[in-house]
Picture (spheres, rainbow, N blue to C red):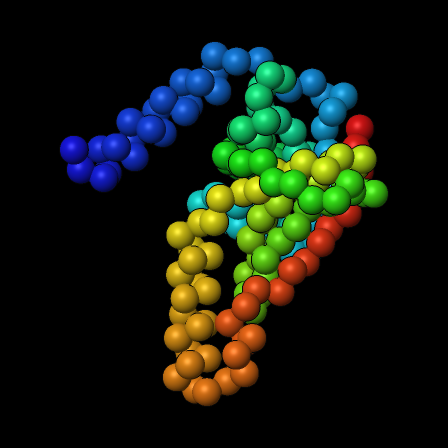
Length: 155
């Protein structure tokens, strides 16, 4: 099967799953004011107020990010990551130039967060910066992402 056919089948299966399951409880929703446009999955979303929540009550795999003022939404898959217990809920972004990519979600008082898979766009940007840094003999760290943290509230 071609890669396009596999992608189409996976997308249709994913959408079918979303329509067949109840939305996660509003009581455990995160809220964030993100002051810059950013990329999550394959979508670029504008700056604004967002809610972030799990799609299913019994799974932390799939998340929904929705802008409160408009219909800007993204559904994306995550995987678990561990760290020290978090004192505040936060979203972590990688910044390359003026492009921001959502990479982690952390709730308060937990040591397990969620990591968003690296997009093809982020991979390409990182690779191009590394190539340009090597070519122009710029400082070695010039191609690395800057980490930007946005504190979020829990409801």
